[in-house]
Length: 332
Image 1: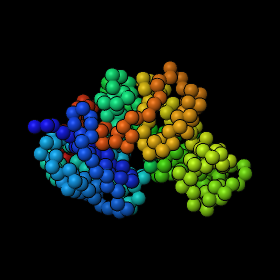
Image 2: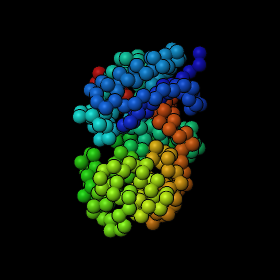
Image 3: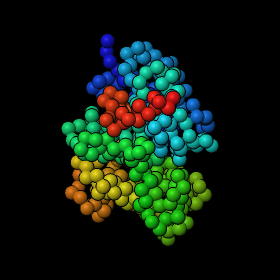
Image 4: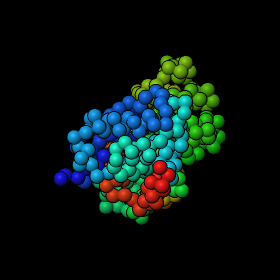
């Protein structure tokens, strides 16, 4: 019988579920919008329903299920403690226990960026390398790190929360987690409109373009701002340059901390603005880096990296995750 793995990418905007073979190739997949409201079992129920109704014919051949989720996580219980970019009133939700019961399969859980870096390490731009960083620039910002072939996890599963690195110590722009000056508050796709309005009010002294007025009125979207940058709008040029410096500082912090051979980028913000972001990183990262520069490149899997990475966690379970799986079993 052909052996498959189920990969589940739990994002703030969508839940993606895919069937992946042992070579890291997606056989079939489904994409479900994250609901506007829910309870602690809503996410797990969506995954169970999606797997059964859309991918049910593969379930008899599924060996295990890998989950890459927004966080922060409590990996000892297999739950998400709080998801700052989720629109729900109560942002905590359960994963391990309801999925273990509902699917009857082994479950391996990690942060979404942690899963993605493991997928890149096994099947993507990090294959054949022992030191790999993955950065997702999406609704939120996450990073996953492999050092000397070892996936970094941390005491609770949050060793990679570099989206909450402080990149502007003088900023009073508050992040969804409650902190200030965080990379995600400045450059996360879900926060860029708010970040732009803050920048307009606190730092911008240039020409008030039509786009700047849209920002002031709360009508500008993240695509509006990147498109404005591309066409030379004076406010967008200055603001997106600030965003690019923040992203570069975040990437440089990881390079300085972990000395990777390659930094791989993905996520919707990156994938929709590849040239802008790569040009910004090429321009600014070197000014912040102490270590020898690694290769900086984009994922070749596009939006599918979340599914592939999640499945990779189940296909070859990292040693650093095994103690958490034992703890999750005991906590049921």
